[in-house]
Each structure stands twice: as C-alpha cells, then as structure tokens.
Length: 342
Image (cartoon, rainbow, N blue to C red; front, side, top):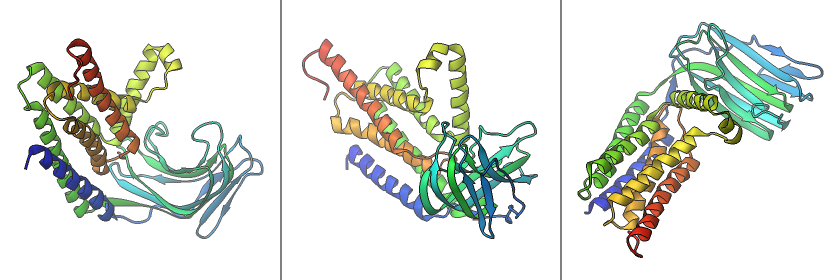
C-alpha cells in the first residue's frame, strides 16, 4: 500500500474515532457537593422585576436602558477547581440592546482581590428572541487569582422575559476513561501530523532553507492548535492591544480577528512551501495534505481545554493553503512556461 493511501486511511479512521469517542465518552463526573443555595440577590429598576419560584426564577424587563439581574456569590473557592454550571433556560421576546452583551445571559464570573475577571470565560448561554426550554451547561476552571465566584442571570439592557430552572453548580473532575482517551487521541494526531510532515520533508532533495521553513510552519500550526483557550485569548488580546496602541489608524479601520488572520496566513505559507517542494506529486495529494491538516487541527481541539473546532476555521485554513498553491502555479507559469506544476 502506498504512503498516500496509508495517510488517507489513517486520517479517516482517526477522524471517525475522535468524533465517536468525544460523543460517547463522558468527560466529567461530580466530585463535590452542590455549591448554590436559595439565597439569591437581585437588582431591578422601574417596572422590571424578578420572580422567584421553587425551581428557579424569571426575569422580566421592559426597559432597554436598565440591567435586570439576579446573582449569588460563592466565597472561598479553591483555585484549580473545575466547576460545572448547568440550568434549563427559556426566553420569550428578548430584544437585544446595542452592545453584543445586551442579551439574556447566564454567567459564571470570577472575582479576584481587586476586580471582576471579565477577561476570563464567563458565559454559559446568551440568547435573544424566543427559545423553548433547553438544557445548557458550561465548564469553568477557577484561576489561581480567583477569590470568589458570582453566578449571574441577567437581562442586560435588553427587554423580554428570561426563565431559569434547575440551576446547579458543583465541582467536577475528568473521568479516567476520558483522560486516557484524550491522551491516546492527541498522541495519534501527533503521529499523523509527523507523517504528513515527513512525506513533504523527504519527498525530494530540497534546500535546507525550504525544509526548515516547512518544519517551522508545521510547528507554528500545531502549537497554535494546542494552546488552551484561556492562553490563546490572553495572547490574542495582548497582541491586539499592542497593535492598537502602536497604530491608531489601523485600530479605526481594521476589524482585527487575530485568530482568523493567523489561521489563514499559516496555511497560506504552508501551501506555498508544499507547492514548491512537491512539484512531482499529484494535485490531489497536495490538496489532501492541506485539507487533512486543516481538519485534523480542528478535530484535535475537541480534546484541548477551552477550544472548540469550527467549520469556519477549517475553510479559512483550506482556503489559505489552496491560495498558496495557486500563487506558486501562477508564478511558475509566468516565469518558466505555459505548463503549471499540476
């Protein structure tokens, strides 16, 4: 069996196993007692109100300039604890305000000694319009600086009604089966990525510069994929802040989404390099390398904390790689002959 066929079967089996295992294997199990009590506090303005029931509460708002909220503080949480917040949620005729966060929202907010940590992941669900009852849950890791947490349900400068029932908060831990499966799955994807890299690296004799550039590009893609969600967001925010500080015109004219830019540029560079190094290979094999790497890095994120595979990111990656291949073909045709690489 050829190396190309081995790669194809390896990818198909690994992708299927990754999706199946993540779907069927339970990730968390409860490791402590319920943390919420019946002692809720709330803030209302004007005719807005909060109705408490035996199973939950309902927020009503007809004032789009006010925030209607109900909250509960949980003191003395242990850093590093993994918390699961779940609830049944329903909303009716919720009209959003001007800001992206002006919706019906259920939040877990971490608070350190000085301030509320809105920079950390907070949202369990954010809704507008009308939605029937549905279960939602969010997983949160208590940061080292956190001293307390606050559970909040709010209509943040939005109108309508927001119902929350069976709200629960308790510590959890990963199941042994999930931990073992994650380690095996990520190791298998690592082997697959090495196989892809090797098939490009040793395809033919090429300059050391091209080989080093290929390795560096692969490494940058894999490192970017394996960043935990909080780390990725922190790095992105710091870079964005620096760029905005250094260039006010760019801040005003460009909607920066550094994650998407990184996705596209890294695969664009990869497409350029592979097109240069694999001129004797079929176009199908070159495209397979781009597509399988794009899909694999997204699927691997199922097992990386705080990351979510996105179809949009796959298409951005694939588009970057394909454009890189096209650019090399255009350059080759213009400077060498009328015959493209592939």
